[in-house]
Image 1 (tube, rainbow, N blue to C red):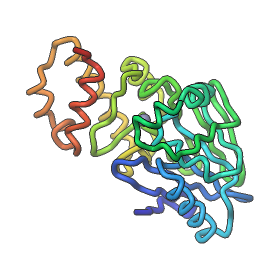
Image 2: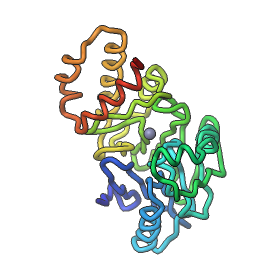
Image 3: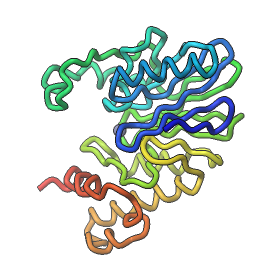
Image 4: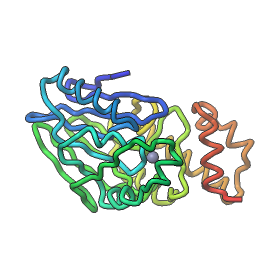
Length: 246
Ligand SMILES: [Zn+2]
């Protein structure tokens, strides 16, 4: 499902595969996250051409996870990411692909990297900020003129977020607290949200932290509205397994 937030921003929504965001620039368009499937990335490429007559001239990966990067091979333009994203993707070997049952994927690494932030302007100005927490390489994109943040998996709306073995809850909360309070949030997964979703994510992660330290039990967590109202409870189970190794 494709939603346009303004005449410059289109979100290609995906419930379990990640959202991709297309930004209409002046000379070319910008794509944030390329989905798990090169075929789907090719469709987005075509959509870019159909909607604006322009090709995608810059790709951004918000972090290394396959559902945000495996469509990279569909693009010949510069691919920007945090420097750790490139490092983590370099470590994806045959075994990694085998585990995912995605042996035919050509991994295409980002070829422009940054450490703290990266600015880009082509009729529209965007700034990519390092925002560690979900993973150490996580980044988010702020477009001030559109009052929007494209959050990657730092913010997930209406489904449970994925807390992975390399998530850092303290860093994650810190990143959320420092985010600009904008009107529109495009999450890594889930429906388009607003600034309240920043607070909901902080609340969610704070409660997970309390559970980890034994101050909230699983029953209370499952009945909390910020947990109960999110879809895919199996993701919560999976996150807790990642956090509380037996
Ligand atoms: Zn992720």
